[in-house]
Amino acid sequence: MAEVKVINGNMAAAIGARLCRPDIIAAYPITPQTPIVEYLADFVTGGLLDSSVSEVESELSAMSVVTGASLAGSRVFTATASQGLSLMYEPYFRASTLRLPVVMAVANREMISPQTLWGGPQDSLTVRDAGWLQIYVEDNQEILDTLIMAYRIAEDKNVLLPINVCFDGFYLSHMSERVEIPEQAQVDDFLPKYVPEHIILDPSRPMAVDPLTNGYLLTEYRLKHMLAQQNALKLLESLDGEFKERFGRNYGGAVEEYLCEDADYILVTMGSMTGVSKDCVDAAREAGKKIGLLKIRMVRPFPSDRVAAVLKGRKAYGVIDRNVSFGWNTGIIYEEICASMNRAGQFVPNIPFIAGLGGEDITAAHIDYAIDEIINHAADAVKNATVWLNREDKGKEDTK
Amino acid sequence: MKEIRLHGIGGMGTVKAGEMLVHAAVAAGKFGNSMPFFGFERQGAPVASYVRLGDQKIRAKNQVYHPDCVIIQDPSLLVSTPVFEGLKEHSYVILNTKSQNPRELITDPNVACLACLDATSIALELLGRPIPNTIVLGAFVRATGWVDKEGLEAVIGRTFGEKNIEAFRRGYDEVKLYHFDQGGIS
Figure (cartoon, chains in turn blue, cyan):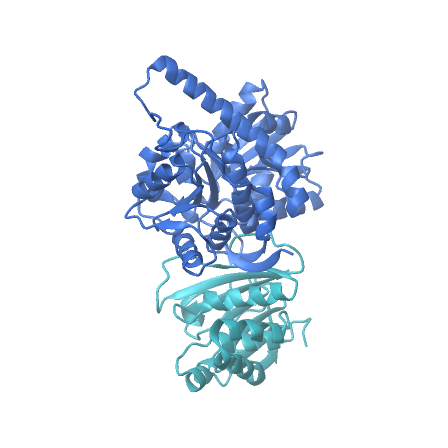
């Protein structure tokens, strides 16, 4: 039977990684991800995990180590956040274009400047176009479960791409809650041993990796890379049912639709803000407001067809971003959704919201305010004019 | 669902106290989550921790604004921090104080039950250090009954050892409960 434990999000990530039995782990500590590195080191020294942990002096080295180890055919794991992810950028991009199934947890942290260390997915969303797969999760159970799914997806021979499992720093990384930990045998059944058939650094089978390549051939690489991303999207959608059968839990695949079926209005969320938003949607329903919630899980590739299918024909929708899209005066997920709707030839009145930057708390009052704005004002809202929920005391918590 | 806000001074184990409540609730087959306030925590500065306990999965992962109970680990917080902010009606206050007239310290009309004790003196006597968290948890369990006493004792024993189980029991036994007219609880 699965074991029930009270653990924080970093421990959920560490246990998730442990259950997948990586051969090589390399990670450099950075707030709020640091405990992941410590927990994994404890697992190895305590005999709970048979991995080789490589001590590195920076994130650049951590990413380089897992790149090399993955090239040599190992199953690998790393984790980082914020400036650590920035420092990885050169090998980060290369891991995806080399088509290496690296799994990386990101304890999302706001980007400098000014100095900040609190939660927010600006770090990994900013590198969304570097060819990785990215999934964002809502709670600690989903961190653990998604890491297990992540290896299955990354290592699938129709995918072979690196993947980020992203969770809000502090709000999940340092929040403790009940998590069911599957048995090792269950995970072993779901996730077979990684047998690389792709590029392998094997002296008996010499091959050139990364030779100078002309644009004609590079175009082929890019095309196939993007097709593989689409394969990953399909696989995530189909794995959801298999995961449910084996582990008793599922998450809806690339998105979760909560009370959407008969909804006139949709609130779009991502990450740890989703839980309180579901509570607010329930309360709004009780008050007769026909709103549903669409939770974005996969950001790369973006599940544009499914998102457009959920939103089309509604009276209005709103998107809450805990990040900014510099240059668009909105959030990143909002722009992804605009692109999805445009592609589908759909327009639905909408409002972009930005909330929770730098780890600011996203409260029930903020969500209630957003729901009422969507219902009452989306139709006559100035197109693409962002509502900043933590600014101007929008929906500020009344304290009686 | 019950929402609890814990106030303390950095170094008093405020975050740990919140986590132990969740451990005890989950061990009893219930649900809970616990989250520290993310600020500039350091020893000697005011800190807070937020706990939710319930019979079903708890979805909200944010701060508690309308607590059913506030736990105040140090009397100085009554002056430095708006500890009563947002209290629900008929709520509980667990207060570590040496005051002989603790009723006078309660300025919020929503408080229905005040549980107080001199946890710091008990901590100094038993543990040799002014860390009141397990003693205050004893007072909390006695006042609210929201967490199983034996279950929490087991968690405290695992986390801090036997001596703190004794401390917890002293808190449970020595707390004084004051009820306010305002309703509900007697």
